[in-house]
Length: 204
Image (cartoon, rainbow, N blue to C red; front, top):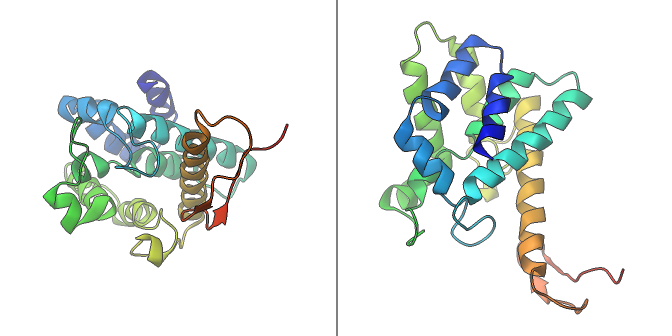
């Protein structure tokens, strides 16, 4: 699965954005090891070892489709943002078996941590364009889409909007997958707070 993610990294042509990805996903062995084994959440979705990698790859695949369908999207920026959107979770949550919020995670959250990590990479890349850095950071900052869902900013770029849609779609579909797992029949499961609805499997 990590090799598949690396394949998307190779598709990024912009030299500056590619260096951001290389900074963590190619050169940082500690980060790579943590990223591969980390969860994407404590409970809601992909809350298992390897969940962060699985979620990230799914989001990138959604973005790959949108980049091909909508020419307004900058593929390099979208792919980079999708691959990096949850890197802060490697510090927000502790490793297994604990898989609990760290002190840094409680105080800052993965969005702020992720933007700081992008800033660290950018500062180590000579002549990195300031506007491009801000656009990448904005995609990370806005990827939850709404202020009430933890995003400091709402999406103001097409790439940020696409990332939010991809992230939300994968999170919700994986949540349904986990809710329906081992459930026989099609009985109503009761009200779910995430979906704000009573849900069940189809009769087919």
